[in-house]
Image (cartoon, rainbow over all chains, first blue to last red; front, side, top):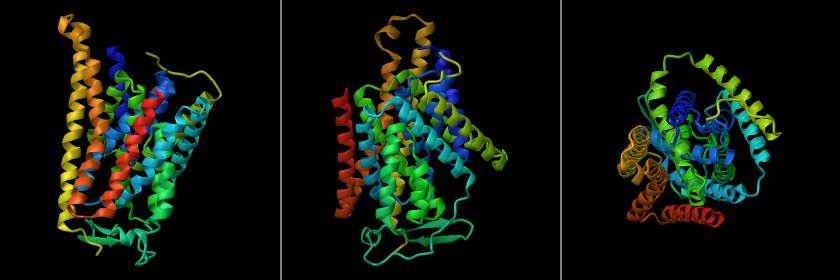
Length: 286
Length: 109
């Protein structure tokens, strides 16, 4: 293995994870474009490496969320039924979908992520109430979370679980196909369909990402698609980035960083679109 | 009831501990594998040829992939202890789906 290339992968994954984490984004959406366009890695190898880093980041950041009481583990388990099923469908589709379509799908996800980054999330919990016979009530999915500003626990209800599960199926499918956490579909599912408080939504979504990605990663691992020389430094850089990076970068102005990220996402989308049509990649090849 | 019970909070703490230590273990194994490879490229001792750093890195990657599965198994045990059979069934099905994905990957190999 080329030591300088491994170090480059580590630093790139660290930066993607640290900056992404600061804005509540998983690093997966940056890892695949970085690996394909800057490092010249095949998209299937990049997707397999990215999915490992997605698991690593999810596991690393899940513990603090759980300790702060924000994660709804019962709801996460129910939704994982849909996300893993979606991931299984994604695995079955990987050999069928042409590479150019993967680039096009990635372009769409990048543009949607940029649009989501510009839109403010609205806390819609409390506007509706769950019925006594609802699935969420029967499975005891309603819960509470500690609100530090109010100084007390705030109870919330989980609504429209079937609609949420339908969106989660799509999130799982895209996660396995593109090697990303699929926040682009999980956020609307959690906020709009299930009407969860934003803090609970972020923590629960992060908690679920690991299991969803594990379904895809198991298949890639069994198929021999995971290149240890690439996935290893990327996973390690992502974990260190998610644990340390966000703390180091807390002083940066959030709005300017958000705008910077939107520009980066759009630029990556253009590059991925060009790759879909076979235009040569730019960047540093090992 | 909407509030969190102390049993649920205890479960959350156990899962948090599993993910905390699992992440550090997997990261340490990958880090050791990378260090072994870097050393091997500078020092030409036979040990570096006999045992590849790539194998150690693959082990670390395996731990990362296995961690969410172990988390699901832990939740399944917790739910069975509570006699929460509907959610236990959900956990078992999720594990079955992940197992099916691995099998699908093997067939594609």
